[in-house]
Length: 290
Image (cartoon, rainbow, N blue to C red; front, side, top):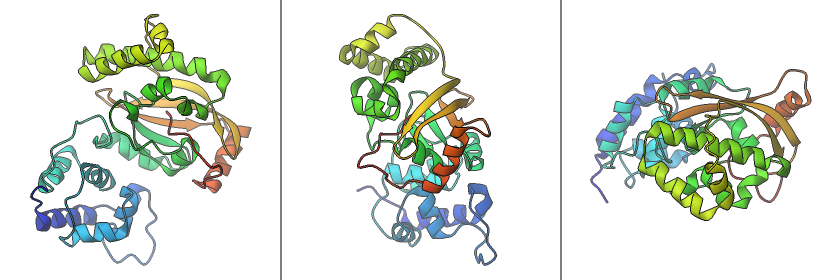
């Protein structure tokens, strides 16, 4: 285990927690709040941790936090890039890649906008379709991302290698999503200019999926900015939604949100989704999509 500066880590976490107001992260203020910022249990909830574990961290106790835990805390506490790096340094963890994978640091601007989107499903993904963070409605709509690293963290990779990833959409829509994903990946590969991560993914997909290889050889190129999607929800049936993307300045992350025109069946289904929440209505749920 690396050397963890437990006391400095605890003090830093407390200082960052104290500066955040509940409204900053979409939480109600309430009349009986005794602390200036967030409560410990609120930080734990936002980071997906147990309250006891987070309390141990602030109490200068516990084992060395993993990179995934640190990344989750950085998001929950809305740390800047420099603050995120400092958090990893205090925990003696190597800095993760800036834009990719489960420990990626979500662009603060996108995260701030995500906090404001409480009435519609929304999530931040990478340009390789890895889910970084979701709001509760997105979890209820498309499910949580699989706990995987490497290429399998990408929906674009799983779409062509794991048939279960397609159960989120009606079968008659699969060909459309295949074309859109490949054209988007062509555009990302060009923008990244020979990036080894993209090259390795494309090479693997060409070997593993004849469908992918045939679509790649069409050389269709188009970043996915908007799309119309039909999502097969286990309790609400097929929901027809418009999907929009807002790109970060460097293009490597995207805020993705779903909406429906008012007074439509889909709008009513979204309202019901907020009531159902993340109740597991079937034995299995498809992995998160985007």
